[in-house]
Length: 232
Image (tube, rainbow, N blue to C red; front, side, top):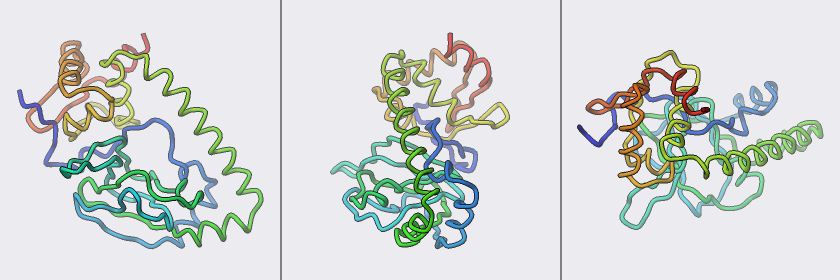
């Protein structure tokens, strides 16, 4: 059995590794439409960096097509993944609003189409509406509370259930069976465990019939059953 779950067909893996919506997705529809109309479209190849830790934040990104890995690259050039985001997600808004430097590296996972919203555009829109400013504060407060709640729950879960939660985030509303092209090492980093532990957790989920491991990819066979098992 291969320990690599990286698929050559990255279009199959279009999910995301987090449950909470990105900040942009929580904006009112009128604001999202206005930001998209003023954004600059850019294309990236797989492995190309959108920005790196320490860069100044002159705006934020919206993913139109493809996926982006967020994490930190070590001195050996290895990317340690914290999040994987997909179409409709955004990132960099907080650094943009707070005017501080990037804290994570952002790398394209496969061919990716992005929208770049500059800090000037965002500031002009916010300055022109006190209602939007209040709404953004509510969104940020809600996201912070959800993040703290999820952290407390996630830390106390055994590895197989932590893995199940991440896999279900990727599934979202896609019809089963769902094929994922993701490296086992990336899964381990997303869950926060060793590669050996993630291999053991995958074997347990496979033994229960929830997933199946194949050469080059992982298939989530029955997301509904996996979700029921995780909650019990």
